[in-house]
Length: 319
Image 1 (cartoon, rainbow, N blue to C red):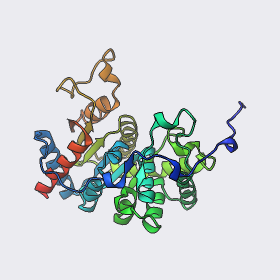
Image 2: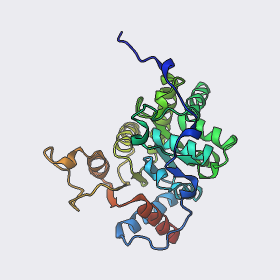
Image 3: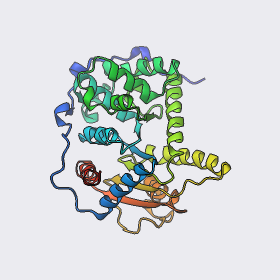
Image 4: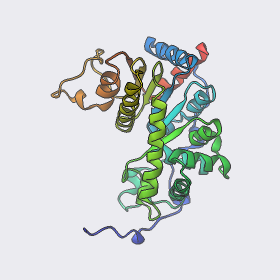
């Protein structure tokens, strides 16, 4: 055994002492007066509508900047309209969603708090650990446990919680964590076994949703690592079972929404290992490898505050 860090020495402070960089007033209202003029966006919207008409899955994997840029209401609206059937979070998404619902504010500056070692060490945010542990004991997934707690509890801003909306609408919102990656893992009450169990349950929920991806759509918005990697493994599992049953999961659409500039419009050609693009997981995994035997992929470059409302607007035109 190697020496381990003594968690009892940590000093956690109340959220009231933290300077928040985002407030609930910055969560955007629905609307998009000037959608992006992008033919691919219109095609993605059409494919989402067609997928739902045939009963196929529309899965949205997302990173935390979707929430931090104020896009929660757009995601919730698509869930309410039945246009998104599954939302996949990374751990940071769950934290920002929870804090917004609880205190109407979220996000701290790493630069502001890391010097004194206070980054992430806020008392109330650590409640997530207790909620997930209690939920795991009942067999709940990470997202279900948090969503249920927010929806049923005293959370004044739960109307902007994607987790609570998932519980209310019975739309899975799954949380895919990597231990050590999220601020709540710093806390003395973090239980790795419970978090791992709950997130593993969510991974199996996602894999089951991917089983219905034939004819469907996979959206990857602002997640460069979690989304591509978790989706890849879930797809392999789903295809393994489908192959045994004489079915296929290959005729579906993928779309990546990101700020990363794609220098070549021919993003359907896999870069070579001597090119930096080869190491962009979303490029080779979502845009190429998983759709090369029958699917179609799209890449939408831009800020979430432009791309997500534009997709939402195109969907309103069709639904």
